[in-house]
Amino acid sequence: MTEIKEKVGGKKRLEELKAELYRCIHCRACRFSYSGEPDRKGIGEHKGVLYEGMLDGCPAGHHFGWEGFWNAGRMWMARAVLEGDLDLEDEKTKQQMYEILFRCPTCGNCSMQCENNLPTVDINEALRACLYEAGVEMLPKHSGLRKLIDAKNNPYNEEHSQRTDWVPDKAVIDDPDAKIAYYVGCTASYRMKAMANATVELLNKLVKKGIIPKYTILTDEVCCGSVVFRTGQWDVAKKVANENIKNFNKFEKVLFSCAGCHRTFKIDYPKFGEQPPKYQALHVVEFLADYLTIHCPACGKYNDLGSEHCGNDFCPKYSKNGEKFPPELTENKIIITKKWDKGPVTWHDPCHTIRHMCHSLKDEAIEQTTGEGNDNMWKVYVPSIFERQRWIEMPRAIMRAIPGLELKEMYRIGENSLCCGAGGGVKAGYPDFAWDCANERLEEADATGAGIVMTMCPFCELNMGQAAREGKDGSPEGASVGGKYKGKVLDLLEVLNEMID
Ligand code: SF4
Ligand code: SF4
Image (tube, rainbow, N blue to C red; front, top):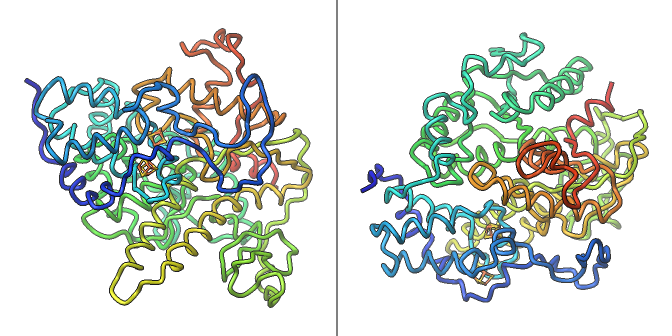
């Protein structure tokens, strides 16, 4: 008999989501990636895959190919738990459910495709929390992450006292006068230090030039808890969330170079924290976009430096035929003068930026709209359209600010982007599956002819970078097996650091 965990709230959360869950009509539209743009041209056939029309967009269903692994099957399971048809006290049932439910990188493709707007990732995570609180026997890799985060504040079994050892300029650590904090995250602090260093170097240059205000890095920073939120281990997730809220609530802005940490601070902490977060959570790319582009104050679109209008048909103020941008919007800008000479680039949108951000905003808008006397559904769709455009445009507008950089888009972009397969505890628990997902994404990158994949998440960079360099067993020799990508995977912040003096 396995130990029954202290209640973590999975069942309660599933009950809260019941009204939305029961909107699922099992139509299975959520398995595809459809851009909603019927006239959009594909990029043709590459190595036997036709990148055109409606493609499978659910990595779990596509990989394992059985009903339960697609999102529609997961929604059925959630219903069966609520109605008592699946008994979580039954050992065999819960172990079988675990095997299915945890093989999903929580990419959110399903939540974006569903016309009934089901919060599929929230439902999947609540189911995982139900299993955890029912005492399911987890893979040691999954339970080990929780134990390590609980004991050492990071999932990599590193010493907390060494978390800031990589910081080159110790003056930025624990600066009491800074109003902005950079939350580095465990992956960048312990495993992707080059990326953390590049971010700090870039920020330091801009502080020195007087373009951005000074910032600090906290020794009290602990794991954001993303992986324990995603895997339903909410007792430890809530513990680290509360610790971070306490430490970061004294700042006006908190910056992130990891899309997963950003998502967790921005979307999970307000739902699960004991006290409400007061800071504004911004990805560093989002923060710097204001200095590299003209960010329209009316509709939020990112426009190239020198633009007179935002050119956004939905913009309530600075549309194509409307008023011009005021001159002050062009002040305090970063002009990149170096020329890009590394060939064409393709862009991978991390799931935790566009998809997770847009779905959360849509939820918020629906809550506001369904309030009494407020039945204008337009108010739901306009903010989510703007938010979608904002996250799609932001990195692309920054890439356009790099002279000579040619962007070659993959077929699936934005909210239809194919997941790299690293999230939701998949990389830790099912590394073969994560490797296959990354390779599928890299095949799509290869089809564009670009030799570089750029992104804004160290976890995507790590997973796709490893898949490009190594075999499934982690050995470099494995790279010669299969049709893997021969190009490089780079982080946009590392590139910006190289391009800005
Ligand atoms: S989640 Fe949405 S798209 Fe998927 S089966 Fe249910 S109703 Fe259809
Ligand atoms: S979150 Fe992604 S992998 Fe999981 S069921 Fe939805 S589309 Fe499939």
